[in-house]
Each structure stands twice: as structure tokens, then as C-alpha cells.
Length: 137
Image (cartoon, rainbow, N blue to C red):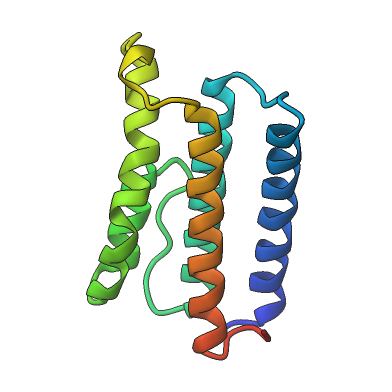
């Protein structure tokens, strides 16, 4: 296991990014849905890479790896991580709908949903790391 300060820093960074998005949502001024979805995806990816780096047992995915490719590294040999697959796939679904010009296929207020999904992933990873003794509660 590596120095947990890097993992703590990743949680602090993603928490600040999410708090900023949540504040913008409260004020009704979230960035456009495309940008918000990309930020949520980046946060989810950052959490997974930080966990993998701290764990130190699996090779890190390449920098340009897609979100689901990073998840595949995480889940290999640990089916527990299947619990977050649908959350990750939801973010990718939003991205794909937007790329295909099908914003009509998105749920109501997709930017808020993307932020909530990213927050859920943040809390899930943080709880897991606390239980594993990787970070303090």
C-alpha cells in the first residue's frame, strides 16, 4: 500500500470539485450538461485511479483509458466493485446520448443527476477506504 496522503488528497480534490458543482446546482447555474457530465466522469475516473494507485496491486490503466476500461482494472479479481458499474454506465450513457444528439433521451435535469451520481461514487469509495483502513474517518 502506498502513502495514504495521495489518496486523502484525491478525496479532498474530488470533494471540492463536487461541492462547487453542488453549489452551482443550488444556485441554478450549473455548466452546460456536456461539461457537467465530463466533469462527473473525470471525478469518477480520478477516484478509481487514486484507489488503484494506493492499493498498488494492479497495473494502472493508461492515462487515456475510458472510464469503463479503468473500472475493468478495478473489478478484476474483486467482484465487489460490480456494485458501481451501473453508476459508471449511467455517466457514459449521458455522454453517448449527447454525442449522438439525443439529449431528448436523457432524464430530467441530467446535469444534476450527473453531479449526484459522482457524489454517490465519491461517498462509496470513501466509505470503502475507511473500512479498509486506508484513510481516517
